[in-house]
Length: 263
Image 1 (cartoon, rainbow, N blue to C red):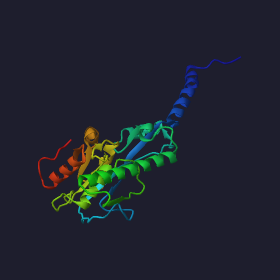
Image 2 (image 1 turned 60 degrees about the vertical axis):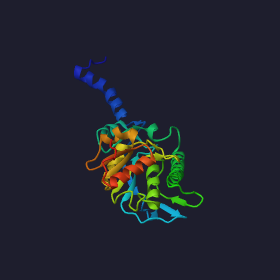
Image 3 (image 1 turned 30 degrees about the vertical axis):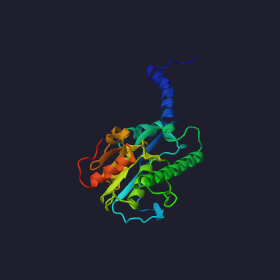
Image 4 (image 1 turned 135 degrees about the vertical axis):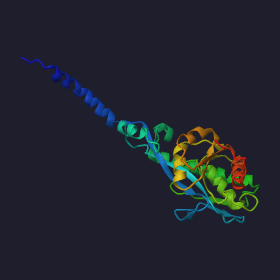
């Protein structure tokens, strides 16, 4: 004959499946990625010992200041992110929990994603070169630009590549530097016509920029609110929508004018 369980014993027995389910939920993989501020690179200088921008067919300038492209680092597409990881990073200002599909193409393998990111980088570099030469009214048949940036993929460095090419070839147009000797950082895609496009992770990129000494951050205008969310102290946001607008803002900033837009 079975003995009757006391109330505490019954509660304990019933709680066991619940505890097991909670433990499973805490450690089970979830479709999220955790991102944080990544590396930045000065496109006017060297990265891993190699010049980022090399120009042939036209004289280049010695530049001062820096133009730093910015990145984020996210857990890989095949990384296990648990509920514990999500909760642990959700309230950190230097982390962002994002749907994995918002970071990586759905269904692709790691190698396919790497190939996709490399192709986006190549297209971004081509567009940056076209936009810069068009802005300067220079012929691509005479002026050749080579862009090299190791271990970085995607299109978000397009704007900074373009500004770097312009600074090396023409500066501010009157003998000075686009940077005005400052450390300028930013992000944004670019197309051949000079239109600046939105990217992602701008709140984390502003932190990377300030960490590496930037005092000004160029941000696609549509992402101003995101950039302001966790804006580090001492970093000024300058919204941009076009290459011409970005150049004009940097020149105005260099000359101390009041016409520099802000978020």
